[in-house]
Picture 1 (spheres, helix red, strand yellow):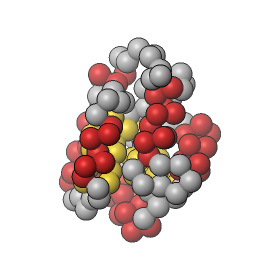
Picture 2 (cartoon, helix red, strand yellow):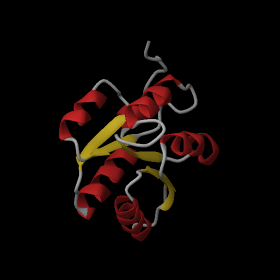
Picture 3 (tube, one colour):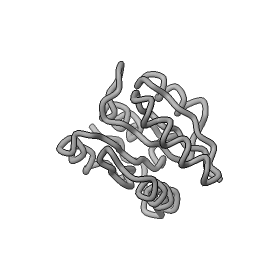
Picture 4 (tube, one colour):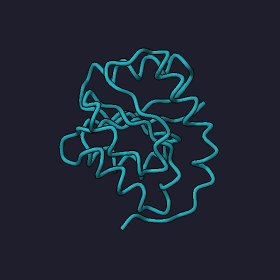
Length: 132
């Protein structure tokens, strides 16, 4: 199946997502800080990113901005997660964001979001246009 990077500093959320997604047959990689997540995006080349908004070292918005500006990563589907529902609207301008989930979320919602993100033709057809 797919290789999925989970960037979340909350251990319980990362473990929950890992358990659910590995049960679905996906390979899961985790990162607890923003810099670690961005490094793993470059080295691991995941098929999808689950991105928390609040990460130490580099927040999720900055990571998403860098993804959008990176010619090798701009087509990576992203699922943004946060307990801060108003923060999720910051990601509306990014075409790579397939779904947003408000914490806490159910396993079924996570699985559905991942399936949609992995099959999102709109993201696969994106043309490279970095944000300024």
